[in-house]
Amino acid sequence: MLKNINQALLPELLKKNFGQEIFENVEKNQHVSVKGFAGSVPTILVAELFLTQKKDVLFIIDDKESAHYITSELEEMIGEENVLYFPETHLEPYQIEKTQNANIVLRTEVLNRLNFDKKAKIIVATASSLSEKVLKKEDFKAISHTIKVGDQLDFDFTEELLNQFNFNYTDFVSEPGEFSVRGGIVDVFSYAYEKPFRITFFGNEVESIKEFDIETQLSTGKVNDFELVSNMNFAVSGSKVSLLDLLPKDSFIVTKNAYLTVKKLKDFYEKAEQKFETLSKEIKHQKPEILFVSDEVFLQNLEKFKVIDFTSQQLNDFTTLQLNQTSQPTFHKNFELLAEDLKEKKEEGYETWISFSGEKQKERLESIFEELNHDLPFKSFKSELHEGFVDYELKVSVYTDHQIFDRYQR
Image 1 (tube, rainbow, N blue to C red):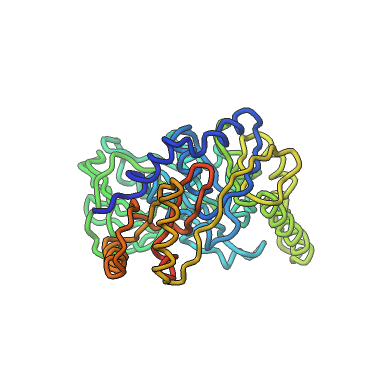
Image 2 (image 1 turned 90 degrees about the vertical axis):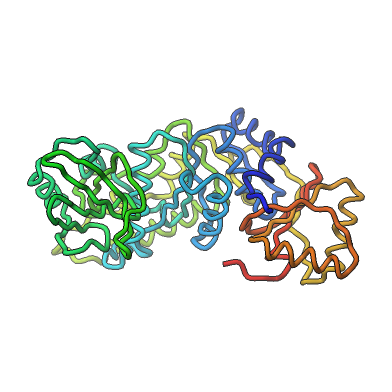
């Protein structure tokens, strides 16, 4: 049977001190630029950083599509509960009408975990998502209320609180910001979670809290408490801050391209300034510096953290580290070519791993090799790793089945 990536590949790479030089350098020099990397190596290194350092990691990605792939990779490596995706709520400045409700929930979940959960986590973000400022900790707490089993809560107080937090009464909750009441049960969909909660009262005491599925209305598990959080976009705040301001001081920041991130923030902020000048003066709009993060503010914040950057265009004060890696070779479903490559790698002392999305793909490749009369040793693991690579220093090859079979990875 296939083992998943965390049970197979990661421990082996840790034994080989895969990221040790990088981690030691960032501790010593604060800002490190890594060159000569390939494939999904940055994601693997972020997983290793999280597992070995046990600190929060903000992983900044170039674009939304790459961020989704990387989020999936990390969830498989270290568990879904340790990975948070932080999206943008709208693509253009001052276009609140195009806000995506699902993205507000994901952003609120990140802020909720940063404010109330001390456990280490990885946050995956893009330059677009970092361009929007967020509520300060004290302001976020003002739109939050912890409800836990055993609380003495007046039933009327609960309904009053929901109204105060701008939650809408409905017969059945289906999206964040809604609640329903029947008998001694309150269903509520907080903005900090992807599923709603069912609160059962016994008199004025919270007897139980269950997460439930909106389609089936069936419970998906009990919890001891949860944060009732309002829509943070409607919160009145004197000032907002960059997400980086909320990170613990000992956090790591990893960027796929810090230079490009800075450029995108600069472009977005300039667009916000131009848009602000065209807005109606009859309505009072908040200035760009209140709502958005400029490139200057981002760079100032970056200085406070240990940073690992993966790019060819480094920022000035970064110490450079050179890896010796290449991307997975292209085989175009030529299995004789693959067999030849694997034989050469074995003769040269390489350890080869192949990532499979499932048992069927592994069996398919094994049967092809059997038909070609090749008995090729390789280690396999279950993973949706996005891109394979070859490391010439450690003599490790990591290939993916979807690249071998020229199959599109969703």
